[in-house]
Image (cartoon, rainbow, N blue to C red):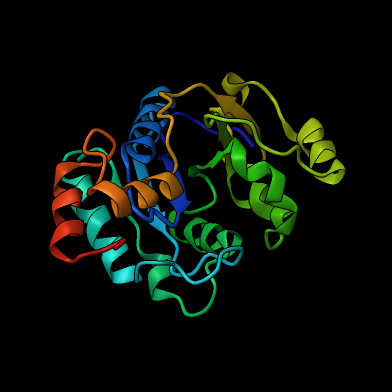
Amino acid sequence: MAISECEPRIGVMGGSFNPIHFGHLRVARDVKQRLNLDRMLLMPASQSPLKAQHSVPVVHRVAMLDLALKAFPELELDCREIYRAGPSFTVDSLCELRDEVGKEARLYFILGDDCLSTLHLWRQWRDLTTYANIIVTKRPGQFPLPTKEVLQWLTETETDLDAVEPMTNGGLARIECALVDVSSTELREALTIDGGLKQMIPSAVIEYINDHQLYR
């Protein structure tokens, strides 16, 4: 559904952010600039349904995010999944956000292409576009192909970025962003071995990790 230019344009990036790193931050910033968004929300999961218990409690993950965003003031922290009991289902968050901003706001959910291979395991994954557009960003590396069901859905839903920009919801497009060739898993391993990769993690977050002896 397309609307006029006066309606708010809001991006949402979810994740564990365990820990937050420049890959997350630069992609969020690039998407905000490319789509000329009014707001870009980083939404940490309390407990990701497809992951085991997170290695660091959510209070620390949120604190690190808050510190990182001081250097990226164009990005915002959204803690709705932290305050909601139970597993953090994206479809619930987008539904809640849609109710808050109204039916005419343009919502864009940012999804790394590494997530497409497990998308069929997400709760009500087909309904994501009921509440928002999906913007797929490239992640470094090679990942398993999505299931046939997801591939068919992608074929039916995907369009070009210019077509998705004026839509309130219902579209899916891919976007090229700054690539940072590192994952949170690799960073956790590096932090265990040598105290961290300062070029990949904001210095304030490194300091917080050291002060609280995280990932040891």
